[in-house]
Length: 331
Image 1 (cartoon, rainbow, N blue to C red):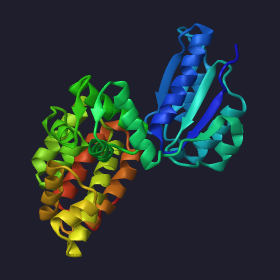
Image 2 (cartoon, rainbow, N blue to C red; image 1 turned 45 degrees about the vertical axis):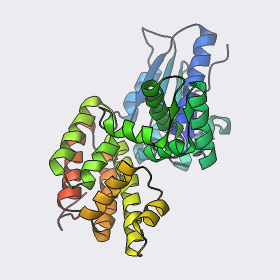
Image 3 (spheres, helix red, strand yellow; image 1 turned 120 degrees about the vertical axis):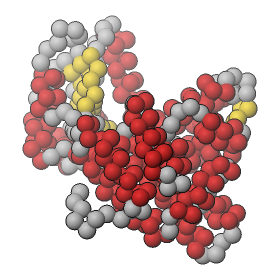
């Protein structure tokens, strides 16, 4: 039996396809070898590269093969990269390492150390491909979905098939087979679902409701859904749309024209953004976009123990201070 390559480098923003490819390699090995391998996943902020290499080179009592995924490798420091390169030159015999990043490139030393056949960039799908993907998903589930509903799903999720699959799976379970999903149905699902998410969090932030925003943040944290990086990314996307809407209003577009040009659909969704315009000026929204960029960096650098307090501080400076930080504030 031919084992997988010892090291793969998977680049690019399309998280879902990367995940699918990793699962495919793992399942193929399991089928051919007839054994269940160990599966591990690590991040630079909670596990050192030394620990990961030690795990890969040492044997195991539970399985004769390991699959190790190391995420966000663009965050590796210079010394970590040197240690990783040494491992790539002499990898563990019974282990496959997946090096994964959302970026389109990483340190050239890493790229040049890995055979070209084991390096792949997973590009974001084009808009028509995303729509076809969602349409195909619901067709398999025997559910009819309108084009407007598909557009709204694409507004709900990050632009990758992993988040699209998660959102579509929840909707298919909720609505069931032989049903028809329209835009209003999805809007009702979002705002009447018992789940808290980055959209319900943004709704409270748009209302400048600090206590409710923190309450939703805590519920999201308890549910284990959404890391700070994911939440900040989702809020950034929504705040950028709010800033775009604010700029359209400043150019004297009517409410309907501005919402249409900003591609904000659904009555409840539109109301959330209108509420946001009542509570945040264009200048304040610009400051919040800068604030989000600062906290995105911190969220990637801090360990998990500090994530909740980091997000609480972010909401405080966002809602209460409207994006303004003290002059002596340091990231």
